[in-house]
Image (cartoon, rainbow, N blue to C red; front, side, top):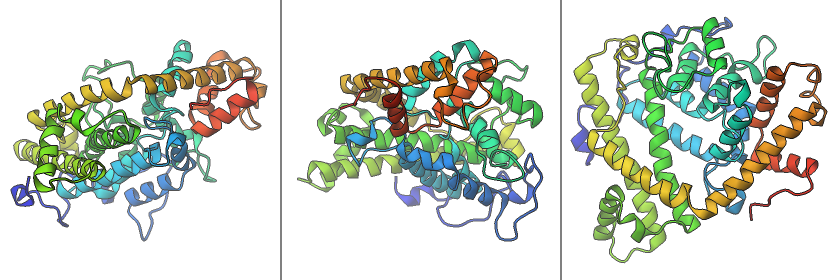
Length: 405
């Protein structure tokens, strides 16, 4: 859609809207700190996230394809940066706080294990007797407990709004009567909520919603790019998907004879554009209908405000079905998943059986710990690993380690 078709939303700087999260009115931090004379609370959150150990580890964590197969496949870090860019663009157009949207986008994948969702599934299976494993809950553990950079507190001591966005960016976790809105809420989230209530039965602010839909937009587009690079997809295959078929026709009509590589890039950038513009237009219509006069009014709206139109949502669902069939369940990817599953399960079993095999600083006091405490400690250690470190540890402890070749 042409930019002039989005008049009334706007892409340049505009004053923050009444429904935006206002850093001057932040609900604050769990541990009280003085204000910065040069940065807002949300800017400080973003900076703390970027300088954290967990952020650096994203560089060597799998997104979909094992990173060492190509220098050009996305990792968790490059995916995160792309999500943050899109989240800022959405927040800017919708006149909410760009820094908060960016901070939530940058932190949203902190809790992911090595080897992508395969690692999470394997760790969840091993932790089944002790409450399972959830990457969103693990992200909260990292930023409230496991990062140890500051003299006065554990974690990063982020603002309430950033923590709320991290936990609830995909929607409420509880119903109004306190029951789980979907799967059971992880214990670590409930424990933190008891100390610092995050209003688990309400939606998150608009900035978190921008980060959530930015995540979908980013991986829908870059998984096509990586799938083409890996040889699992081709441009003719994408002609069977309504969303990409129309965009490919635009590319070919405008650039007859363009080579496949440039055609793919033109397709991907157009896909991001149409999805972003659809989300802006739909959110703008929702805001005009709901007329929220504060960030709390957004939280109390009872619906997701930043969403796709019904037409785009249907097209996006078709695209996801295509990607699952042709990338995520492709034989080559499934073989790598089986190897990754084995690595994570082997490491958990080894550390749980003998905590002395863990590095110094992690094995302390675990020999006599109860099983639940020991299992969660092992999960914390494993979840923090990069792909490369997990493989290194597996080679140290076992005679044969998959090479993912």
